[in-house]
Image 1: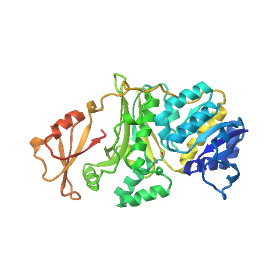
Image 2: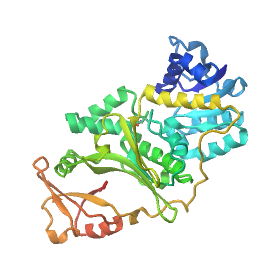
Image 3: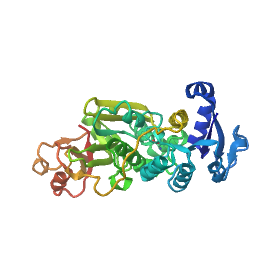
Image 4: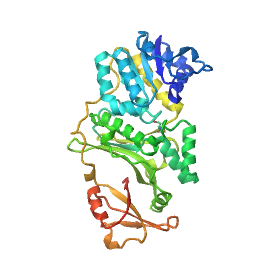
Amino acid sequence: MAKVAILGFGTVGSGVAEVLSMNAASIASRVGEPVEVKYILDLRDFPDSPYADRLVKDFSVIENDPEVSVVAECIGGARVARDFTLRALKAGKSVVTSNKEVVAECGDEFLEAAEECGGNYLFEASVGGGIPILRPLGTDLAANELTEIYGILNGTTNYILTKMIKEGVPFDTALAEAQDMGYAEADPTADVEGHDACRKICILASLAFGRHVFPRQVPTRGISSVTLADVALAESANMRIKLLGRTLRQADGKILAYVAPHLIPEDNLLASVEDVFNGIVVRGNAVDDVLFYGRGAGKMPTASAVAADILDVVKNQGRKVGLGWAPGGDDVMGDLDALPMAWYVRGTGTVPEGSKLPQGARILGCDEAPDTWAFLTEPMTRRELNGCLEAFSETFVLPVLA
Ligand code: HSE
């Protein structure tokens, strides 16, 4: 029998215990042995929980129990999670996690520790909730050179944007609903300001392109400055606004990565990804574009992915599974301001004269945003756009997905 410890009995941790119990029989037959939760670590008391007898408050109980072969870290945050992850790996255990913050900050360190100590470190649930996205990069798509990954990576903001745009629900109400449903981070600023999507694009970039990409290397903008006028102006051009994370590998091997709200054409499949769903496009040089779609957040979808990693390491005790990447550094990232893209530029006041606009720009206007103007540019670099924008006093700029 395989013995598992779950760290953190919050939304995801309790979901993992539930999945392992709900599907215990089929899991045992698939893995070849029963998988049992021996400990759950949490500082809180849960006297009414069916798992009350397995709750512990001291991590060293888990660390020093040789029966525990797998630790599922569902604590969140980076500091305590890093400490416990390293201690578990050094004690020869495998660690699986849904914690994108700690993977994005310390993934290379954990992968190295796992390699040295004979365990595995898996983190499928850290990107895309229940969507299988990380494992396919190294298995089904392994014959490709991956060139680009982009998509809707945060369920909370996609839920908020969908509710605001389709039902006119105010931002705060939509956010409160997302929190009630267990989609949002403990501090929802991480969702709203794009930090969560940033961590996820870092993990995807690191896996796809082989060097650690850190959140501090990735320019990030969330949805807090997107207005209903932007939504209406985008609609007037048959486009929708979605928060996307995007990463590319240039011909010189340098990596580009950023997070920003984008205008995307209505006929792009990502425009139809709504509510808590995520949609992630992976481009390979043989397969072309592949779209991964599913629930990007929530207790049971995320627990499904954590539990799958548990089964993978139990089935493969003593063998290396999963993927890795080399350390990062200052030489990893390319020049994002040199990437050609089309742009949406919004301003207020008098509509600018044609002579002030970048060549080929198309003015947008609609009744829902009477005091606001906007234009769409032809593809140009951000550096070139900045030159054109010197003629304007104040503008708000978003990229447009071709
Ligand atoms: N807060 C995250 C989201 C949870 O909304 O996508 C899943 O990673």
